[in-house]
Amino acid sequence: MADRKSIALAVGVAVGAAAVAAAIAVYVARHRETPPRDVDEILQAAKDTVRKLDEALEALRTTSEPA
Image 1 (cartoon, rainbow, N blue to C red):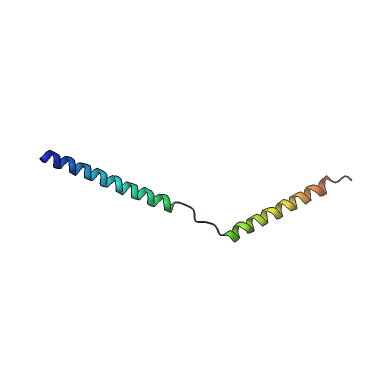
Image 2: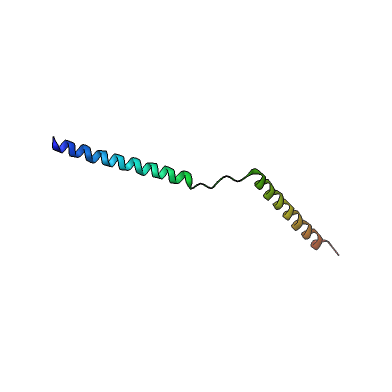
């Protein structure tokens, strides 16, 4: 009877430790994510990129025009 109690106690401790480890892993995974960016910031960055590309394209056009 004592053997069964010891085995049950060991299994209970192992299951409890696994549950705590899983809970910690889920917590860390959820809090490691980067916060979402604001849509307006994304749109502004896209507009800035397009503006820079337009400027670069215009610079290429002016330097490659035949003289």
